[in-house]
Length: 60
Image (cartoon, one colour):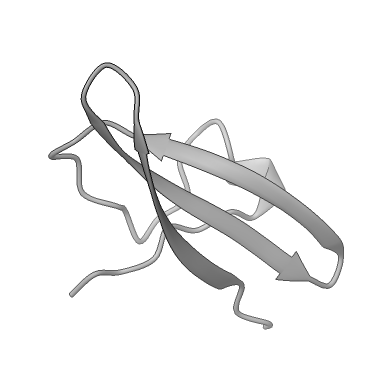
């Protein structure tokens, strides 16, 4: 299984937001996931992104 590459981005929009920029080379596409400040990325895919095989990076 190919692991996606993550880049850490910061945006100021109604307070500091955490942006996980998702890039998967195969197939090739990008998707930006916004997390509210204080939320922890999950190892399991969320219900919304489960069919897209999107996994959040583990900070631990």
